[in-house]
Length: 633
Image (cartoon, rainbow, N blue to C red):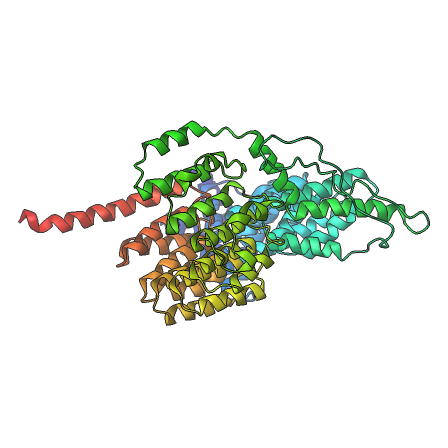
């Protein structure tokens, strides 16, 4: 290798001598001298002046090292320019020329993935597009680019730019991958684009296109982004429809009988809805009739009802929970031990979550009635966990426990509050049919326990919808300054605005500074953290305010804000901040939450957790050592 490097030096020197270019000769000498001295910055500086004499295609350690240095420098300059919102910031054109020559060489040699990786890192979307379009397998390179953008692009704004470019390239293909396009559009929060694609596929006379539209809808539903899905569905609803007399959707009888358990979910087939379609002979267009049938089905999918019913059917059919375990636990627990009594109720709820099987509770009503106060609230709310997704019969199942007429009835307020919370759990992320009832219940009572349950239920039912009217209802409860109801109101506001980075967070933070109730401050701290879910650098200003606050509860909320804003990104900046607070904050709660938040940030790269935690353990050992130090002297 050394002989090859010496030969390269000799060739460059001879070329300079043949051209009588003594300045070039000096530059080449300096490049190699500084390289072998280990002064890479100076070597790169002279390499930029060497022009074409610096051959990027040369296979030597010298060239590879300087190319790596050049790319790192170029990436750094481009990143700083982007972060300062000054894309026109000066980058040495000679440095840019070297990087472009390197990218062109990768593309010419067929190293498309390498070229795409460098282009994405260097923020050269023009070269990224060129590498994709010139590759032998465009669909494969596009899929690779999507994976790289999600795994290695840490700035959300730039990731969106990459995804927009990929959507543009996808749309230019003779046979676009609509599934991937819609996934990208969902990350870009562009429901209009998804609705247009679904309409195009639904109106196609090709049955395969309609099936693809249904598959896209199912894939979108898996992400459980309620606000986005409702936007897509509503845009489809506004499309051209048939005359009112031409299509009359109907419903067929259930396909099969259910198990004797009355709470078992109904068997659902995707083709059940709109199976009976009648056509007006003179007015109905056959294409519109076909589109109307498909539209009804896809709206059922986008609303989540189809997936939920199929999931319920699956969980009920394959429920393998062992009631003998619960019976043994119940018999082993001391009758007067309220903690163990509640724990047994929780265990039952978790064991039967989503199965609709509440046999254990029905068989032990006397034992269950021993629960008092908040234990009774939790026991009633546990029914919501068991019947999660049972949208059709959820309200009728909870009717015996609900406030009568939307207000407090003669029952226990803890049972009534728990029942409202249970309704939210049943309809979580799919609460269109129950939101109004929960709002009426919230406005119709002054009992703080019932308000507590109604706020939590309403937040879950309207998860992520950012509904202003619901927000105002919850804010009214918050401003009563009741500790019990206010804590739930703060959390509920966060659930309602989850992932929106709404300006409402500043309003919530201001009230947290005004109130004297720690419960309300804690609820608001968690709610504020929820509003910045997945927003990454957009949340930095709010996170900075919370983590520098004098109130340890708000700093505790700041740790959760960091965790949720950068969840799964393995962002170095977020990790550094969390490690700093984990060892330096004066509050035990803040330090504990900072360590917990590391799990949120690093869940996509769990191997890094084991690398970070030894440093925390080391600090803990040192603290223990110094605490015992005086005992030895």
